[in-house]
Amino acid sequence: MDKTQFYAALQAFDNEYVNFSAFGKIIAEMEKILDLSRNTGMVRNLLVTGESGCGKTSLARAFQMRYPKAYLAEQTITPVLLVEIPSLGTVGAVAQAILRALGDPYPEKGRVADQTARIEVLIRNCKTEMLILDEAQHIYDRGQRKTQYATADWLKTLVNGIEIPVILFGIPRLEHLLEVNVQLRRRFAAPMELSIGNPGDIGFLNANFDVINALAPALPIPLSLRKITPEDLTQRIYFATDGRVGYLKRLLSIALQAAWENDDTEINLDTLEGSFTQIWRNGVGALNPFNRDFVYRRLDRSGEPFAGDRTA
View 1 (cartoon, rainbow, N blue to C red):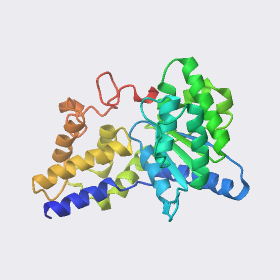
View 2 (cartoon, rainbow, N blue to C red):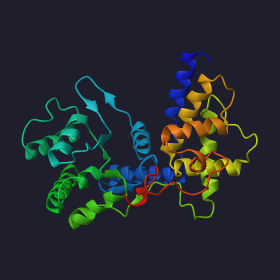
View 3 (cartoon, rainbow, N blue to C red):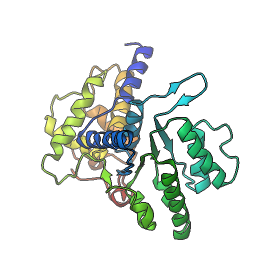
View 4 (cartoon, one colour):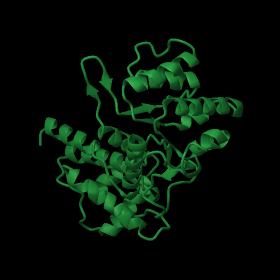
């Protein structure tokens, strides 16, 4: 294939969603929450946590795409509003991000109270039925406990004011935000975790294999199973990605590019070994999951790519 065809195929692969078990369960729960709100006016809010690269943003975007915007003559209808919380997760920064997503021409204008009032008005005008805040741990990360409480208290006020379901997406420490403010915690259901599972679980490797298998049809250059069993390849890919869909797609995208540039007809272990070093440059020899001397363990020690992520 020529360059134009390859880049189109690469982009299509990058946009591919993987509907693994937890992904589907969370989508279904969000649908139930939205349906309940539409039909009864009852509001239920949800906290979704997962490690970096597990697919939270992909899930949020996939759900938003089910309810696309409608551009009318005098207004834009936004059934599901998705907002990424900026790294500076102050009340003002969060309020401005929401206003910007709602199309407010002057999101920085006014005091926080004025901004909050405009959010409530615009959400009604845009007929928004669900608010999704991605990277919501940035709200908790900002400042000391007093500041965190104030930010959580503002979020509680916003949740009460807009009277629609709010879904928070973030890494596991996002749960600490609800611990800071008990009134906010009461407004959210028990957290749901977006994860393929734990390595010790029965069927964990099968779950990883299913994810790889789901992506395989979207690969313009196929994965090779010559000289390796599907089970061994699945294990090696798990250790290279820590079982996270985002890392898997990144690994395969790098491998696709390398195979295409070398005019290869398949992606083999050598391709994957070289590709992994672009994710972690120190991943060589026994620390490269696709090397024959690999030690078959999680790469979560100090200085390794997944160090500390489980408790981050």
